[in-house]
Amino acid sequence: MKTSADLKAEILVALAHPNRIRIIELLCKDVMCNCELAPALGLEQSNLSRHLKILVRSGILKSWKDGLRVNFKVSDDRIFKILDIAAAIARRETEKKAEALEA
Amino acid sequence: MKTSADLKAEILVALAHPNRIRIIELLCKDVMCNCELAPALGLEQSNLSRHLKILVRSGILKSWKDGLRVNFKVSDDRIFKILDIAAAIARRETEKKAEALEA
DNA sequence: GAACTATATGAGCATATACTCATATAGTGT
DNA sequence: ACACTATATGAGTATATGCTCATATAGTTC
Image (cartoon, rainbow over all chains, first blue to last red; front, side, top):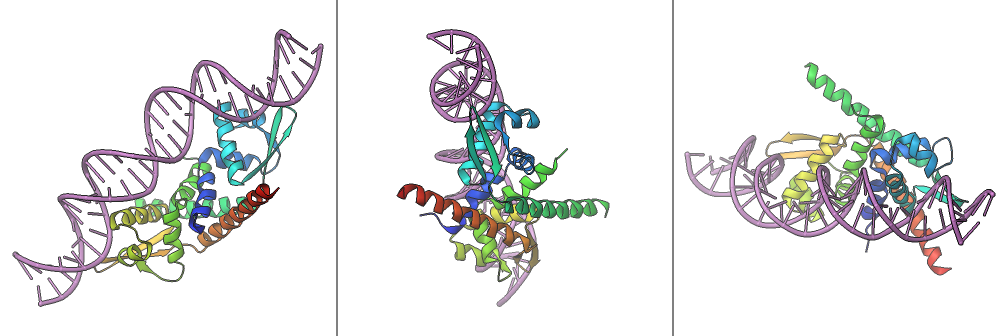
């Protein structure tokens, strides 16, 4: 039986990778397919395909076929809120370390 | 050079583990030390100590010594917002899978 | 200083993750 | 059917992570 912490962790594990974050940030404006994302991110096709699968399986992205292509979009805008908060905490931490070096 | 996605990922990687999420949720009410958290979570002392170190290093928790003990608290309440959003997305995903089984 | 309590860390192991190369599958257009 | 494009996946490898046991360190109390 999965606990509530397990379920939250599954979402966060899916989010917690630099390339997957970059994918999500590219998708903030547009719906895009694998073949558009790959060159934009400089990722190998098979690698990107696996990252996208992780994001779809967790529910972070939605996907649908359009002919040969598979399109992706972010399923819930609150994902961006998570990224914003993570950025804020990271920024605070970076500043704290910079101060520690000066002192 | 760390990119913005790298920095966000570091925070999210630190957050993305069931035991670390349980630690944070226990700390939502109280300041607690290692020796109080260990029995509450059923974790081995050395294991818990390492999880706490990851959370402090990332900036998610603050810690300070009090005699023999080290106390911990969550450094930024927005961490709980991240967990709430993750829970909401997980819940939606669980419901979607339940519907798929019925149909 | 000796005994005790709380925390940290080294070492070793098992498992998970990210990546690449090669190949398979699926859909399109001729 | 054939060639072409887009995506998915098997296999192998390197690295990272989480856990445990044992031990070290730090601070307290007598």
